[in-house]
Each structure stands twice: as C-alpha cells, then as structure tokens.
Image (cartoon, rainbow, N blue to C red; front, top):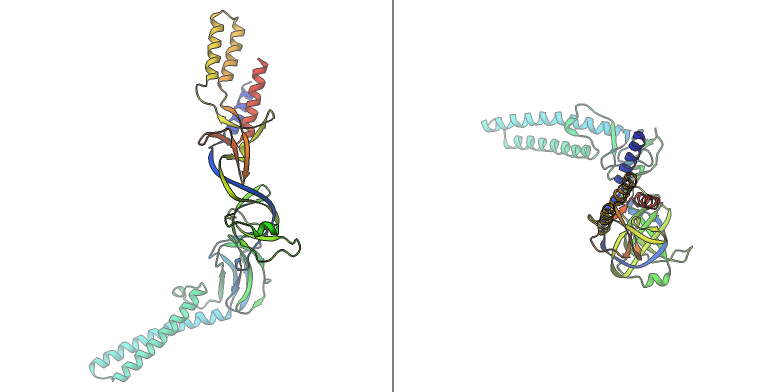
Amino acid sequence: MIRLFIILFAALSLQASDIVIEKAEFRSFGKQLHVNAKIVQLSNQRQQIVSRLGGHLERYYVEPGKKVKKGERIAEVKSLELSRMSADYIALGKKLEAAKARLASTESLYRKGLASKQDLNREQIAFASIEADRNALASQLASLGVNPSSLEKPTDTLIIRAHADGLVSRLLVPLHTNLSAETPIVSLVRSNGYYAIAYIGVAEALNMPKKVEGELHIDGERFRCRYLYLLPKVDEETQRAQMLFWIESEKQPLLLNAFAEMEINLPPFKKYIAVKRTALTMFEGEWVVFVPAEEGHEEHGEHEEHAEHEKHEGHGEHGEESDHDEHAEHTEKKPYEIRVVEPISRFGGYVAVKGIEPGEEYVADGVYFVKSLMLKSELGEHGH
C-alpha cells in the first residue's frame, strides 16, 4: 500500500507541474480565411560565402543544415597569395624600422647643420611611403581575418568565417579544390529570412485591406506572420493571387518550398474575452474551461452543515461516520471547477468565448490532467 501511495503521489505531482494557470484577457478577432501558403526566401536573404583569395580548399568546419553565428569558422584555405602578403608585411616592418632610424639620424645632422633640408625631406618622404604601404597591407590582412600585429612569420592559412547568422544550405565546392579569388564555397540561408506566399482568390486580393494578421501552421507549430504586400502577378499554375508575409521563425529553421496552412485574420476587428485554444475541452457534451476553485465555496459550507446535522441526529455507527468523513474530505479537496463557455471566434492560439470574465484565472495547459481529476472525483462521489 505504501509503495502504491508513493507512485500515486509522484504521478499527481507530475501532473500538477504540467498544469499552467493564466488569466482571460481581451483580444482582437476578425474575419478568418484559411488558405494554402508556400515557404520561400527572397533572393536578398540567400547569401554566399566566398574565398576572397585564391588557394587550396583544405577543410570545412560546417556541414549542410548547421546553424552558424556571425564570425564562426566556415572553411580553411591554403593560399600562396596570403603567404606573400604576410611576408611583405613583415618585410615592410623591417624597412620601416630602418627608415625611421635614417630619418632620426638625418634630423640630428640637420639640426647640427651637417645635412640639407632636401636630405631631410627625402628621408621623411621615404619613411611616409613605407609606412603607408605597410598600413594598407595591414588593413587588407585584417579584412581577411589575420591579425597583423601577431605576425612573426609568413602564414598561408586563410580561415573563412560567416559574415552573418544563418543556416548552411549547401557546400558549393568539393574539398581539395584549387580555388580562384571570389569563388563561392558555401550557400547560407539567413535565419530571419523566411517568408510565406499565401494563395487567395483574385477578388479577395483586390479588396484586401492594409491591416492583415497571419499565422502559419506547420505540424502543430504556430508562427506569427507579418503581412508585407500583394505580389503584382497571379500564380500561373493556380491562377490565384499571392500575398507575401514575413514569418517570425527565430526558434527553428524552416524547409523552403514546403506548403502549409495559413490562417488570415481580416478586419473588421472586435475585442472579445479570449482563452488559449488548449484550455477548451468537451465535458458532458459542452465546451468548458476549468477554473481554480474559490476558497470557502458555498457548496463546501452546505456540505459541512449537512454533515454536522447528521452527526447531531446520531447517524451513525463508526464505520458510516468514517466513510462520510472521507467523502466530505474528497469533496472539499476539488481544486478546480467546471465553467461552461460558448466559443465565438478563434484566431491563432486563442479562442473568443462567452462565460468567463476578463482577468479570471483558468487552466491554460494541462487540461487533460484536470479533466481526469474531475472524472475521478465524479466517480468517487457516485461510488459513495
């Protein structure tokens, strides 16, 4: 019995952790359209990562489908051009030191009257020219991701990095390929660059208002969509107009060219008290939501009064009184009440309903556990 009690207590604790309480609130609902939509990406959201120098492609640090952050390593290229650039930078550093020493010596001689102004100008120009060449080379190396100040010897290793957050779509070049400069090696899909084209009737499209709300449904997931504009031509295959939406899909990557259901919310909008879709359930043939039971509910008071009355009348042997106490305790411990509601409209993850007040708490998630609890309670009462 103790073991069974522990198992039941653990199950109830797990169920309680899955029950989410929220408050009913006003939301806007309008006319709904349910249409097909295609997930696409605009051309300016597809980017290609290139090798800015020629060389030999040694390795990839990524594979198709991997999410990358800006600055993350993509590939490694061995470049003779980079080797020459880094060697030239080191050589220019040594030349600059020598030119600086000559300039300092000439300035000293000039102050003593042993060197002409022309000699001083010549050394200043030579120093400035070498310094300019070195600074230009330093800027080029820095743009390639090489830190010039850390160079002690020439390097031919070029690390190509992602220039934006995104998803690796394709590796465009096989390993151990000799590349020329500006060769695209990886195709990158921007993580915030997903769009949906919703297909609607031409007549509806021509009368489409500016304020439109959309939500895309993909395998149980819901994505909010922001309406951008009506595309200037109909789809040739379906002969339907095309509405372009931007999909808020930061949580996960989407599959391009996949079709899904688009729910569109159109004016006129009206405000209704709304609850989450997950809160509604059928109970004895009616739509209901569960609300937390109020403390000191009238029903409990009546039950206690009835129990006290039976006690004064001498009801009872010890066994019956014990059973009655158990029944009273079982009734008092109901944590939720059933509230019958009338669905009016729905959009996205919410349903407009009548029968609940704004700000009133209700069970938003975990309705299955509450329903099971209520059914068990009903069976227990009938058993007594």
